[in-house]
Length: 163
Image (cartoon, rainbow, N blue to C red; front, side):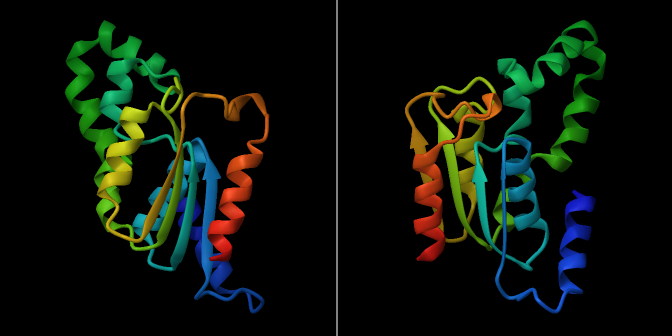
């Protein structure tokens, strides 16, 4: 998170950047970082998080979501570390950060997604107090990790940003 915030510091030094109109975007982990940056730094005015991870982490671990499968298995083998692990992860969980987001926010998610489960992302979206929109896809056809481009969301994002 600190590296991302230092990136904003760098943008602040650039004469060609209108620092009153900073937007951040990312997919998957980048989507999670997008939400975190919007929560942690008021310089972010617009955030577009595509299928964000780092949301409601304990539930993702419990569900054995693909990004948390190794941690799930570790905690099954070492239950004595569960409380400390969850306490530490709370600091980076967007569920903990969402209520600080003041940037206009667009989020995409899929109802069936093994990487970024709907039930982990939606509670974060619901806590965002700023102007927000969500695009919900019925399945994981987005295939973000396979490299396929979701032209529907890209078109929606451009229209949303234009407005």
